[in-house]
Image 1 (tube, rainbow, N blue to C red):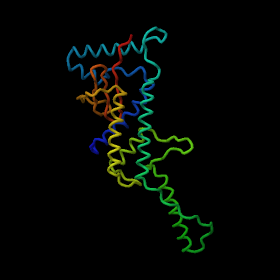
Image 2: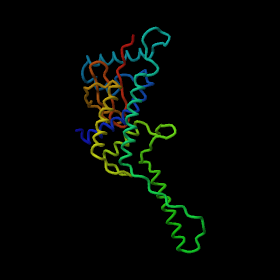
Image 3: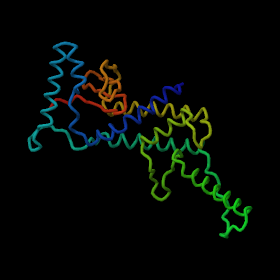
Image 4: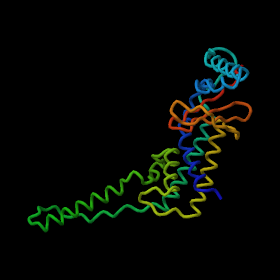
Length: 254
């Protein structure tokens, strides 16, 4: 059984990786590898590793400077392989949020019956009208509560939320964040846990993050920790802090 801590970490990881994932679709050039902080770290590891880092940087620059008119392998304008991955993950997260909301989201407070407009001629009438106005305002505020999950538009079938927003909303339900919600049932909690772990693994694979990873001693410029991933081919670094930036080793140009 997947723990709440593990599922929470997976959902948070999905939310943090969503921007790099969507940007990777159009970012065929890839960021230079390694970044300044990693170069400084690698310099402390010895001349051999520094030489390898310089080689990566040179290859990345050659890939960026390649004339589009030249014959040879070049980065394509769009990462077509990621488009289907993003659509699949997002559809799963949105469907899971819909299912979860149907079980735990409390219906909005009922709107009071409308009253015929009239001038209050006594203190008792003013109290009645003020109470009615408060009930109307409370019902409107409850229906518009931003913590509520918004279902797909029945006319278009589309959600206003993204996969990232679905992950964060599900994270709130897993961690018991306050709002117009009931407690999360055990079976549904386990379903969210399984789905979140699988989705995070799918994102890691899409971004080229291997199973092996280590946390570097030197932090990112935003203050977060940098995790270095690699499967022995193309190393990737990801900041686990607020910026959630990723750096990829450029493939060897033709």
